[in-house]
Amino acid sequence: MGRFRDSGDDGGGDTGIDMSAMIDMVFILLIFFIVTTTFVEETGVEVDKPQAASAVQLEKTSILIAITTKGEVVYGGREIGLGGVQPLVRRMLSKEEVPVVIQADQAVPSGLLVRVIDAAKLGGAVKVSIATSAKRS
Image 1 (cartoon, rainbow, N blue to C red):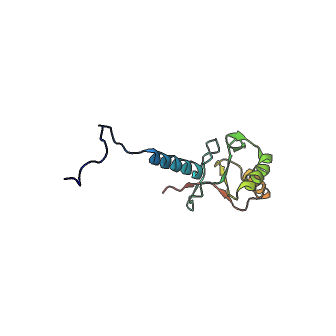
Image 2: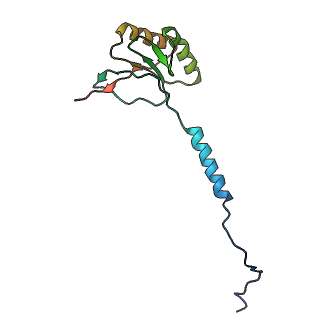
């Protein structure tokens, strides 16, 4: 009987679980997920992309440039014009090597599309793709 006797004063106090270690772990995980998250930038305009049977999904991190039916070259929701493509691509590629994706409307003249592709390549882009939608049967 003496072996199982309480040696301390119980005093009726509540015993609880120390949650500080779990809270620290949750904050560390939160910071980890915030730092490792990649955000997809949109062009800011809606274009009617042409359909292609060879359409594939590209990487999430890329430079998205849109060409509207009015001939506007748009990046991040603002018009940059044809002259703004080369400096934009050069500046973005200085941070990280990413592909350039051009979202051209179906009604865009091919000459304008070729000039935008050339400007992107002159800006240092190695991989330039044209965004299409999957061909529907």
